Length: 178
Image 1 (tube, one colour):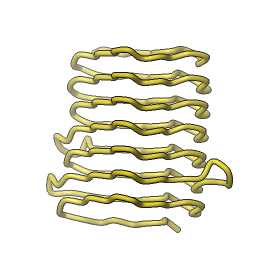
Image 2 (spheres, rainbow, N blue to C red; image 1 turned 45 degrees about the horizontal axis):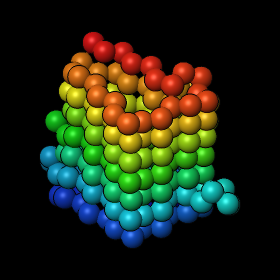
Image 3 (cartoon, helix red, strand yellow; image 1 turned 90 degrees about the horizontal axis):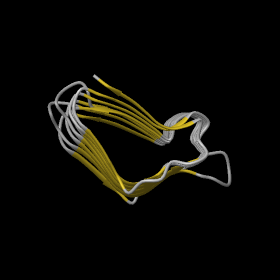
């Protein structure tokens, strides 16, 4: 079972959430009608015990997503999975840690993606796996020791990588710019 199931046609703001040791997702959310989703100051998973049986956060939306000061560690799938490609939503993530997950630290699909001050270390596959129709910007990202690439980018728009570190991955960065 999920720790928290959110189905909404309106804006959602969650703060101070702890979702550990669930059989499925820590948080499973579907937010539509162009509504926004914000998650702040939350912990999804547990690096000491077993974490969640699937994603720390599994979110599908047609609106914009903000994730701030979130820890998603030790989940059996992705730390965070966000699909905001159903509409024209953007993805903004800052001051977060998505490490030691069996698949990706963060897998995201959106119009534009901005990642700042984020750690994605020692994940089984990619630290960051990002697809955007617009621009992708990474600032002060540390993505080390992941099983595949530290960062995998696919975008039609511009990509900016500023003051970031990618070490001890299969590849530091793989970018497909269409």
